[in-house]
Image (cartoon, rainbow, N blue to C red; front, side, top):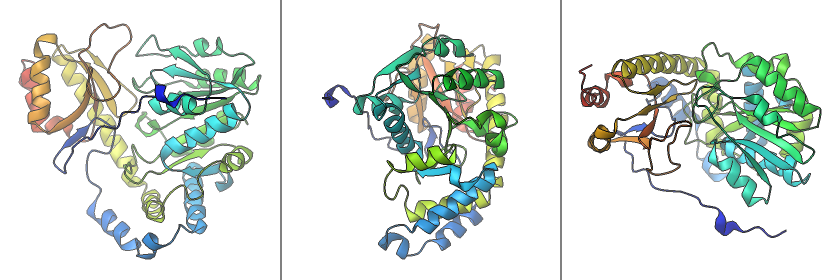
Length: 369
């Protein structure tokens, strides 16, 4: 098999942020950690963590801590460099090794399609027709003997639709009949109202064809540490471990992750604050007659009026704010059912509504907040 890598387009543009930049473009943690947590992490790192390869006992400790968090045996946990490396391993084992195709909703996390193309795996794209709901039956209708894997964000990315239990159950059952693996990428799970870490151990996910993918880059705030993990059956996790990197995460990243999960209340407090702020921002923008898409993630979409768009871009620059908009850097921001190119995807953090930028944004929309 010959794979043409020239057709794969990778965007790696510099973001140019500083400590004063409002980073509202990548769904990262938008505020600093408590100083006490930061100091404890720094004190846990030694020169040996730089000099030596990671000790597997660190991985075992982290897997055990993650297992305790979610109420599962650590043998079901597999660590990776963010969720990216695990996605690639899953596509390799479930599609490439079995000569099967992959079903993904479009748009979704861009790296899924990129990894599949790089491995020569056939991708069945399913266009999302609504930014506020998702039709699981449309996926099921695409299932046949050629399919080996379905990867779906839950909540959905980029629009933040949330699947209900009945939809998940239906997808799992119908896929299981054909021995198809289903990956629920729960990168944004902590931002769903009522989320609890032990939701992962619910019986709905006990099927052998289910993989839950998690990351510490979003609610946990460790985007720079590059730590992700999956939870599945012990058999699946063991099989996937055969194709991941020898040392998937650094000793430093492992120690940071261990400390954060030991103080998981930091993640819970941040997630709740984001959910509260999300509701406030949506209500405020709607009161200004701005089209807004609410979300179950830490980002929302809103449409800038045509006559205000150039002023909005100027405000971003003036206020040192990074956001995803229109045809800016990265994947174009579009919303199904709308022809507008003025949509903005904006990441949320606590007290964003109190920033000079947001107050100026409200004034730009002709109403003083």
